[in-house]
Length: 358
Image (tube, rainbow, N blue to C red):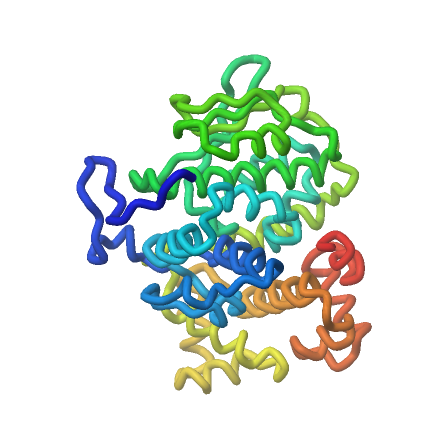
């Protein structure tokens, strides 16, 4: 990135967005990109607390898996990071460090898909779960080529190179994790000008590069889509995808009672609260709570299982606690009972999930 201009991004009509624009300030995006950005900084022993000044966030909050941020907040942190580091290829550095484990349930759903094409479509369909700040689509360009295309939500030219680099670099990192390090796309097209660090693009993407293109997309040959994945597990794919679909619900759709139940469950996982316990904490009758959840098509047991599965995966990916300790953290005193429950939720043993996340 050659510069980080001041000012607000604009909408499709060119109108400047302000803090009052509901799309710009809606806190509904997982904080994954900010997590990866700060992890990179910490790995370099760089100070990054100042990046959050004025954003309404702190670095410590990023450890909360329930945190959702707005485009405004993410943009503020990223701009400060770019200014502080002066690194034009910061998005590329962030994206190439990401793995399937970085994407939690979405990564698990992709990894256990039948083919690379299936994994690609799962990732694109549910890209918002990964915290993407760009919208993406799957495009069939010709009988020989398909593409992962990126679409900015706002006209935000100063941030576009960072966002494209992070998206396309992480997509390629995941593709190579699934298909092997020899995989390369046929070409990368981006709408911005050739950056000063274009040689880093050549080294990493190993394909034709087109700057100043009409679209932002990474193109690959159709035969790659049929490549079977050795980690395919139909049961795990179905279960993780179901959990993934529940994980992201746009603002205005998720009922307040569902959000309240999830919040209470996350803060009391060790106690294994049952529906009557949660109803009591919400000052509701058990019958009323059950009815309110049913009105939204939700079942308490399914919500509880998803919250426990997400927390277990998060701790397994962290790599610091033993399987038994993780079981205790989410309410299982017997490690064997936790292993059985985890396999029921995800289709694989905790140890295997940790290995895949490594």
